[in-house]
Length: 373
Image (tube, rainbow, N blue to C red; front, side):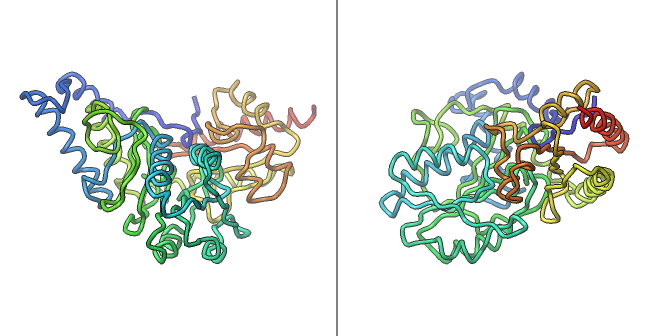
């Protein structure tokens, strides 16, 4: 099997799974219980939280455990909107966001909030001058993903944070689901940050929302003591332990991994450029973990299933996307044909050259066969 869909989800690291299993078997008590084994489970959670805080350079009290990035994004957006609606009902985002950003924004729009989309420059970067003009006295939130999941565009988060910082009543949320464990982005001037374990070789069902200490939120889930007042529910000790381990492993040797993946990305691009009907959508602002291409004349799902016959797995869009057209590709290229024919190849530090060669061989065979139809 050749797996090239790491942006959708990653296989679980064996060390992470071992930590999860150990916690399941040995620390099964409710960490909010006052008896000895409950206290032991709570200490395990506290140790995991301290490790996450140390890695991300935040305070342990700023970590909220969720079921994943979708919940984290919903909690950040709805939580801020409902808590600070007396300040205003204006929110700014970009045309490159994940559906778990647009979902809560659509909900808020239906309930009296106003959402503006910042313009992009020719490279798909947030137009900083346009952002400055969009922020108003009643703007309470700017939400921009650090890396787009389909094209891999890495936004100038620190510059955006500096602009938002000039408006004390406005908060800055960053969805870092696709950048955590791949590139280092300081959180100093970011108010809220989302990420999920299953993108960094962790277990599905656990994510985090980092919320700076002085910020409040209206919870999505009410009812009972947990690790925080902002998200009720019995703390999932094994999952919390596992995300801490996954984050530690993912953030080790970042530069070395990045260079390795960059070499593989360049190898893929050089080989795919030779095809007349193949267009490379990812650009030099994209991180190398994602390579988005359009194959004009072949339906994306047709190529996907053709590759699947050779036990090779890529994706057409983000796994959570709806509709036939890639919104990010269209936003970047303004080309309908490229937007409806895009494919995403997402690689990792674990991807081998042999796997890429198998993909390229299968792609060549299917490209030539399908173009004749």
